[in-house]
Image (cartoon, rainbow, N blue to C red):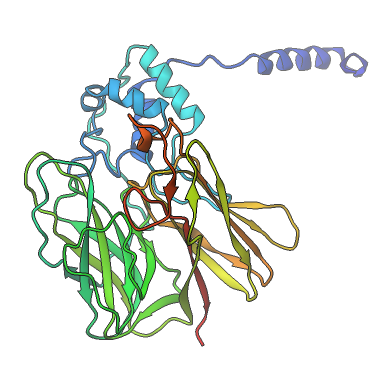
Length: 405
């Protein structure tokens, strides 16, 4: 059709312009300063910076490349960052998973023999994240037992008695030794229930009567914080329970921390409610990979703030889906590679409006075959639900906001 234009010279110009734009631009080899440093800043520094929980410092060209072989394994296997969860209501993390494009950039950088580019004059630093808050109240943890020098990861329970009512809107952990205290879980124990003894060692989760789950703290995830119009009233006589994940470092160290609370002088218009869905008794047969589905249609409207999935080592994938009025199904959460050692708070940037009749579905897929790490060096056996580390759990807590009654 170009040949029919009234001015032949315009036809030539258009053909030339088309031929130029159709040729892809020359892509220079990626280098550290221009291509790798921005990825590190966005997705690695919550852990891999001086004083962080990560074992290596990635803030300089020399430090990063010193561990390039290990980094290659973690990047290609998508093990890092460990915040590997997606949602149609993103972002769920301040250090989201690597994209396919970022993995390709890393591969090209390595194939090009690690070019530095223009040397950076200062170490890479993180920008302040507005999702993080400044606590209005800080409480020192009860004295912990010294962290074990050797052995696998384990958990410790810390109990904080509530001596006066609190209107809670945020929680965070300030560890004395970030490389030792890796993550934490928050829960409330109602008045009249016996709290666990200080330093009790649970099997990942604490299962006792009267306990309400709140959320988690972990680097790479936003601090646990409620929307401005919502608070959780913790009454006098309650106990705030914090379960910390501890990683032995090869020597006895300090596992203590400070608990940062964000509180309000008066209750907000909306109250936080936590609804729990669980499959109480089940068996995962040897060499089988069942998927269990939980959930229901809501009878009352609400705002969804976040999700707290709970499963142990046989869980492989966890999904949460939302459907409203027979419309398209939306993904609330997808964790394609569940790892109970890396549990953060899956909080949405903005509450999700759920009308009455909204259908919530939670799918837990388990793997009990030779590919499961729990079956390493042994034949698969039937696995039951239960409280022990080698048992399994199938549970989803949803955090919702409703007008205060």
